[in-house]
Image (cartoon, rainbow, N blue to C red; front, side, top):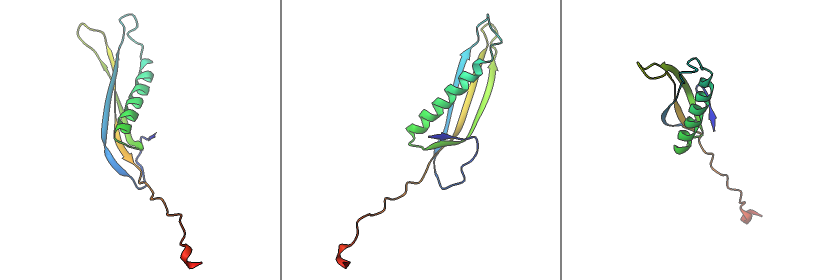
Length: 105
């Protein structure tokens, strides 16, 4: 399984578009803990791989991520990562027939 932010310039079959959203709440004691975005990106990538496997894909291309800091009036802030991409499958090569015709010997 592979993932790329670019396109795939070889023969492939498009299996569909997938999207995921992951989030975490920032505590009121540490409202500037933006390093949590790193873990959110890892979670989003893992979820994209899981969805691609469910669609029998070999990879996800044209992957993009959006980030948000959501503020509520009285609640704490949330960090949100949205990820999306296109699931593709590589064409399977037909197995070559390895038997030989013995009648010509």
